[in-house]
Length: 111
Image 1: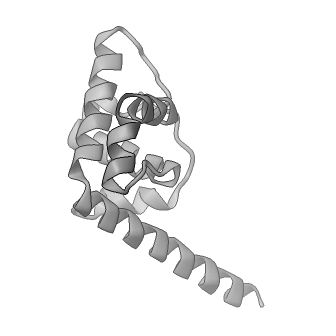
Image 2 (image 1 turned 90 degrees about the vertical axis):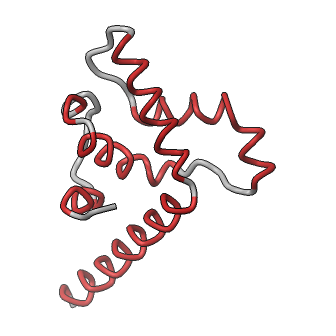
């Protein structure tokens, strides 16, 4: 029974990663906005910041445009964007508090 449970969760995790990769490919500007806000926060002197907080700012600043385009910012993808930012800009390692996540595998993958 235990193995069946792990198989189900592994399939869900893979599906979530696939959905993120599809979203990221379709909307590369989301990562660019996230990255720029993180840079801005760091330049303001923050030593740590909330990745979800950055997503809230992104929604506030561009929410209307996104609704017209038909896509939304998905909180479930926040951990993926944190890992991507750390991979691209190592100076952000430790800037965001992280928990163990399926997105940890993304660091090893090329996106």
